[in-house]
Length: 259
Ligand SMILES: [Zn+2]
Image (cartoon, rainbow, N blue to C red; front, side, top):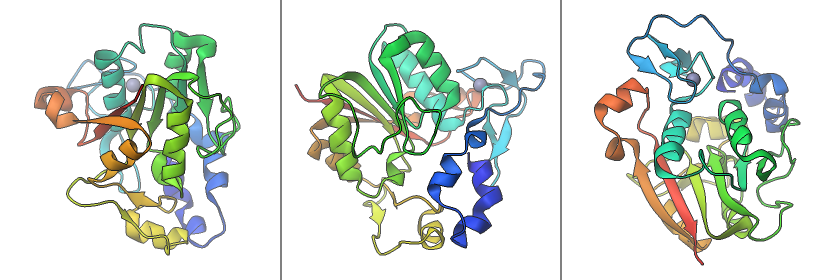
């Protein structure tokens, strides 16, 4: 998706292409092409099991060893998967799960586990189960056991409304598993006066992001009735595992809806 973003950035900054065009394009959701895996080596994808000496570069800065050539996963997806596998029963037990802007590598595996209980939602993607914004979800109160949202909330102008809506569709005791751009060294950086893709690219490093979250994210989750736990990759995975699975400094929030 970001590779596509890089290719089209000039048009976006010039105002010739909007967010719906970028994320609604099914081509941008295709997996990276499969290639013949090299012999087992340093890196391993915990999602698809591929071992390779190198992963592919990704992002506007062509971050090295970021994208798994087997399943298209990025560092944050592999961290999320390790969390699901080691800290939840969502890969072993059939549940009702809502996945926002679902990543294909994760979606196909979660759908295989949860069947019709698994629902994807996206305002732009025509392949999503439900086309809707996070601020107006067409689901009943308390319907889902878990919501997975990975690098989506920063795309939503009114993120407090989105968090309230995600909390509404969670059952009491249900869990929001959330990843966002996060820098805990300061408060959330956001400026509603930045209304153009060019201005937001300059401020946040992405033309369609509204903010970079800071140490007050926990409070925003609490305001929505969610009790958050913060898990930084470097706090719960050894340096060896972080290297082996090629994770970065990603942080994951696990927020439980109060009964
Ligand atoms: Zn993979």
